[in-house]
Length: 134
Image (cartoon, rainbow, N blue to C red; front, top):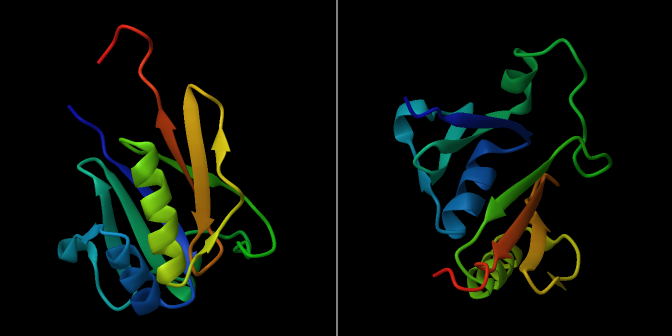
């Protein structure tokens, strides 16, 4: 059985966050979306639930971190090419996000990242195939 991962993130505005991820080219699963939540499809088995902060608060007794001031998690998404890494950062900037830091080229790995409108960090990485592999 294939497992699915749901990443749940608190957001100030579900419509704004939804539009941001649509602007990056990701789809929305309407079955799991409403005025309190939007389900972003990153891959067949990786979904991001963008939850309005009051709705998110119903799932935990802990305080909700302000992602603009603190970091609890770094989300990392693999990309098929360096160009796709750069494209996603550029799209994020065009749709209300900002580059998280400068791109880094480690030879075998190229990485960059962005913060979404709520300050959640999304790292992007392209890993070069080892010599002799496609």
